[in-house]
Image 1 (cartoon, one colour):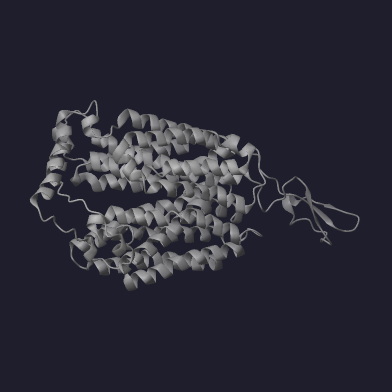
Image 2 (cartoon, one colour):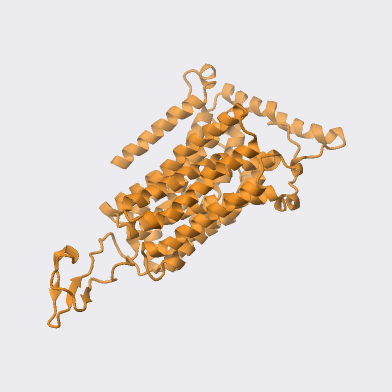
Length: 524
């Protein structure tokens, strides 16, 4: 009930915020809800649902496997030559043998449903399989949306993901490799969502409203993480882990159905849009489009030191983000000892911190640029201290000062909170280097950064295959800290906020080649 209330509050806040994003709508469409506003809300909802499908397995898996710290059966543990005092034993109960040994009952494993003996390595494959699939469709999704339309690509993605998600209890009963295949398929379908949403924005949202629509992508992603982990924990503890698959499957199907109902490929194809709004949107594109299409000089791009520095800083930021997305619930539950509901809630706090700090740092960055207090390059390099160096410092300190669970969680919150400054470092730097090819650069960066989604769980499995204590997790935190700090140093040395020479597009020598794109833009 609490989670449902929070979801409704979040949706109401989104409606209110989105309404403020379209001030020009009121005089044009008095008494009519603008369709592009509905599209923007659906972008937020789609991102929330997409992240729900991405992160819910991190909580569900805890209830599906035998805990590494507990025996796989309800056997007892024999402690040789134990003292006669039993006050420190679990539940204060134990039996002594005739030889003076102490028999301690094994810890009770909660009954959330069937449990499977999947080792740490197998669990890392299950969590990482999503990103293998995601990797394959993240690049071609944009051209597919252009050819077949964004409505069908996103709608069918959610509908098919719902079917696969509902089958996971059956997959688990058959074999772990079937679960891995299912997660791979979910990733394959979800990889289409984000590039396609950018295509939706390009077709539906006027240029002077696009930044607010793009903000809904980041906000919906964070909101999806924040509500999914505690929601999955509550479902598991009260109804069993199978419902932590059935409910997300139902919600995914609901989003897919509503998407088909409310969103069309373009304003011209929407059945109930008013003529005034359609004309307003199409006129805004006709007045602003002045594009000469060209292929990016890939050789110059991949050998550009500022772009290489950007890729490294972006990769380390995504490594930290994906590491906590996939592993934070496991760490908080199994190492710090919180139950599933609390683990889900605590795991979501760093993302709330990152969301709010992202808005804060974005405001600070815009203010500094507007006042011309700092050059763009100086701004990017200065704030890398917040987005990379401080998160690295907190991760280095965490294993040594995190003796108390609350202190440990606070360090993780501070780590991702300061990483919110990436909104004015690696997340926006592609626009600085090459405005003409910013989408291509960001696609390349994201394609490479997605590998962190399956490499981070593999690193955790490698370091924790023998034990699952803070001593083993220390090396994972230090590795992540190293990524942050080293990439930050490289960015400070080689990074730039200046437009690169290879961004230039040479004009065609004849007038025909220039006129032709303008004719096409008018028809749009």
